[in-house]
Amino acid sequence: MLSPIAYGLAVVLDLFILFIGFRFLTAPGAAAAGYGVPAKDGDSAYLTIKGWRDVTYGVMGLALLFFVGAHAQAWYMLVAAIMPFADTVIVLRHGGAKAVAFGVHFATAVVLLISAALLFLV
Image 1: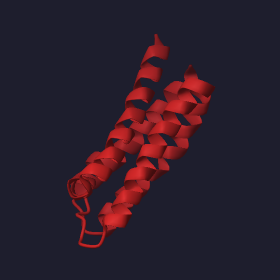
Image 2 (image 1 turned 180 degrees about the horizontal axis):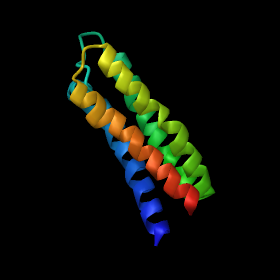
Image 3 (image 1 turned 90 degrees about the vertical axis):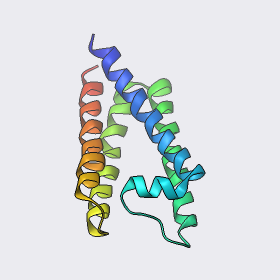
């Protein structure tokens, strides 16, 4: 029973980061505002970089899960949790809302750690 939950959560998280990446590529201003630090004129290159980074991470997560297995995906999720923890600090240091920093980024890091733990148990 644990396997479907662990795999399902991992797939959802990988697809979600893909969605975020595509959002930064297609609607960068809205995506940056949702991130917690609104974009300024001239930020388009950085927003594109973030978009492609997130797309790559989503594809990498799916590839690890489907071609290598649950334990590789668990390690990936464990390491990937660094990103939303860092995003929490970035939003706070740049005047973003605490609700976004903790409610979005910190919460995402916690969910990634839960996903990693579930995948390690599979």
